[in-house]
Amino acid sequence: MASANDSCTLCQKIGLKPFTKENIYNYYIPLHGLVSYGILSVNVMNPSMALKFLPKKDLTNALLVSSIAGTAFYIYGRPHLGKVPSGKRSMYALLGSSLFSMGSVLAWALIKSALPKDNAALATIAGIATGAAIVKLSTDYINETDKLA
Image (cartoon, rainbow, N blue to C red):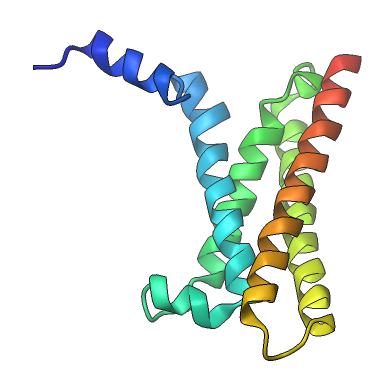
């Protein structure tokens, strides 16, 4: 039978953090939002593919809300906002996460309209690639901002 220490070691081996209140708010909820963001990119760029793997119901709004929530928790917990009162910090986090997620959806819609209509694979790759680039650039920006705090 595996002990709690064994599961922590397994978590470390695969790169996950221990389940603490801080890690849930600042790591696991943002991670869930990131996964939702990735699925959202495919859903926007290639809805027929998303319907093959997801329930028959359109989950675009649920994915968008999850992406916004995860990003908001990520922004809220950043060191550069540590001295900002929690109400104001919450509003900053919600604004930043909404602009990030909604801006990405808009970018994907524009990119999709510029791509050939009959190339679903290209649209999927473009969605995932641009989503990854947006996440990388955004996290780099936030990390640089944190260094100034």
